[in-house]
Amino acid sequence: MNVKKFRRVEKTWDEFWAEYWRIRLVREDETVAWKNQQVVEFCVQMLGIRPGMRVLDLGCGAGFQALLFGERGITVHGLDISPPLVRYAKSEAKKKGLTATFSVGDMRDFKVDEPFDRVLVLGMSFGFGTEEENDATLNCLYRATKSGGKILLTGQHPYSASTHTGPEWVETEEGFLIHHGTFDPVSCRLGGMWELVRPDGTVVTEGENPESDGIRCYSAPELRRLLAHAGFTRPHFYGSWLLPPGDLQWFSTEMITIAERPGGKPRARAR
Ligand SMILES: C[S@@+](CC[C@H](N)C(=O)[O-])C[C@H]1O[C@@H](n2cnc3c(N)ncnc32)[C@H](O)[C@@H]1O
Picture 1 (cartoon, rainbow, N blue to C red):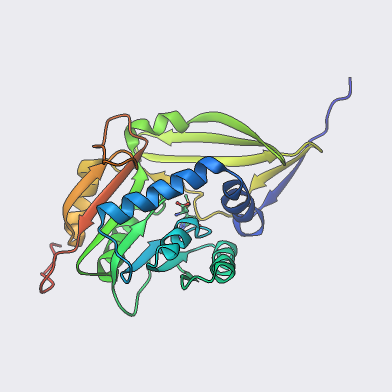
Picture 2 (picture 1 turned 90 degrees about the vertical axis):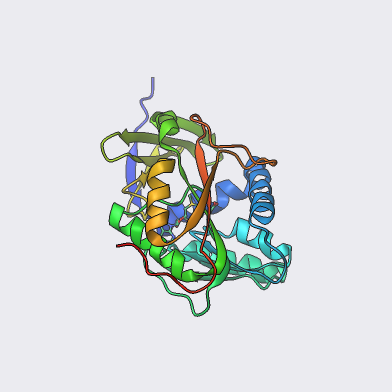
């Protein structure tokens, strides 16, 4: 019997994984395309987004959802830390003749020239930073939202985090994609590492990655407190993108949170 030889190569997020994982696999997956439609419909209805409003999409990835907002006549700007994803989003907007704009930036530390009507963090992307960085993200979000505006955040719900642990794999056109998931109950962080095992025996492992420290899974009471501290009010928590909206359940994988920046004069925020 021939024993296959495996050769490990490490590739960074920006040189390989962003394009493979967040563009190629997503673009070819009809269920993702269907979910993106649901996500955009949910945001439009639940946040009362109308054409002419300005929407900021933080951690926009390759811009699949931002472009759907653009197709509805909504003025959208997407920001992501990964240059190849922003390049792709820009080229798609140009190809489709949309006014959607994109830039490279860090949601933990950014400024906008003019606040937005609605600010979104989609794709379970709130929580990549440390505790302090996530607080800083909420403060940036507050400054980026108009008075009377609304935000929608999605995060990984902690009670379902265990469903992502252990090795899982899926066969793709390039080989087997394997995820070694871990959950640390003390820090409440879901982590893990991706590997692509190609038929020729090459194992592509993850190098530098903006998500390599995993994601902090906030519970609803924790996030309620953080949002209040940042100045947001009226938080509501949902467990699914289907409409009419479903409450957050203990088994919900994704926690969808909507909150408001109060109108009127900015108030002094609690320290
Ligand atoms: C799970 S993906 C979600 C992409 C998109 N929102 C979606 O729902 O398909 C997370 C995205 O957040 C980006 N990201 C990670 N850390 C970030 C940061 N500190 N600032 C901005 N973007 C970040 C990643 O590059 C990635 O595109």
